[in-house]
Image (cartoon, rainbow, N blue to C red; front, side, top):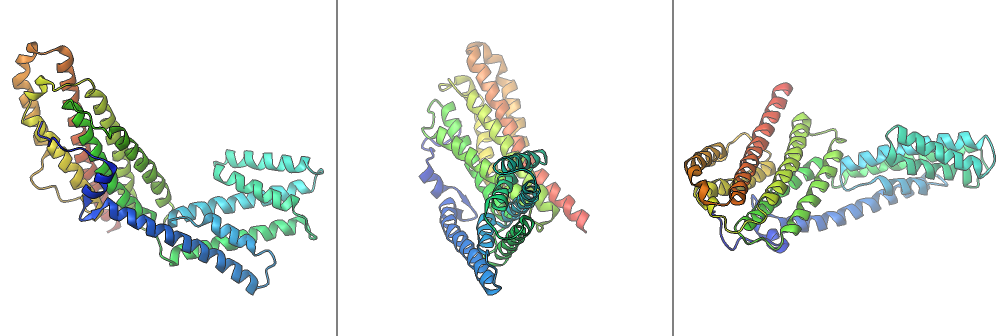
Length: 380
């Protein structure tokens, strides 16, 4: 096939070679380090601001606001909103159960029953992330020694948590604001580049020389899929961006997962291949399709980075490549008796997976462009 013999990839080479409009993955890694410092500074600012406001207004237990701010402030605005929702719901449920069960029975049985009831309720309501916070609030309301009534302690805890959340959301919004949808856009662009590297490593095996870092690349793709899925969930909590963004990001994330599944199937199909001669009869059409799929991955990554999908890639027509390959296969079919059945079946499986990947790449751009266009039409 039309592939360069020295095209093997390692994590270090990937950081240098994979580019989206001049932005290297190494540059993104450096930005991640700066973002880590920014996140730490924002968390410290939110906690200190809560404590200062508490002292300014004479709040004796103002440190609970600082604790809440530290807990809910995340690396992006969407994740902060999600964590804030879990925190406030858990606190409300815990405060209600803590106060209610403190009126009946004696410790520790009423405390045990309160925690069990709160956790079960959170599970039934689909608020599993709030269940632990509800338990913590119950413990504070029922076990912390206080001279006041339990209902007053519960009310204070809710107010302090809400105060900390307000400060955290304000800091996330005003101090170096970071949107999950923008991080997801960059993450998806990198995801398709790493998918391309995984694709090339798989085809090294089809030539009889499996790439040494194939397993590492597979794990890299899985890690990016998980990270982008978390960003997608966080982006749904953000109010800005418009429906075109939400639909486009969700569609691209789904296409990325589907293409990864197709690549895993291709990886299985090329196993046990050793310079298959039947596949060599499909040249140059087979190699042409492979080269254009690689270009398709890179072009789609550029489209995601620029967030423009309506322009078709120049000199790249995957459907035409597929038609030429199918025509070539029809012309060499009469020679199949000269080759082993395993070799013929493997070649057919490989070309089927290549066609599927090519069509998924094209659909990723076309469907996302259509979703963006439909969203703009609705808005106008």
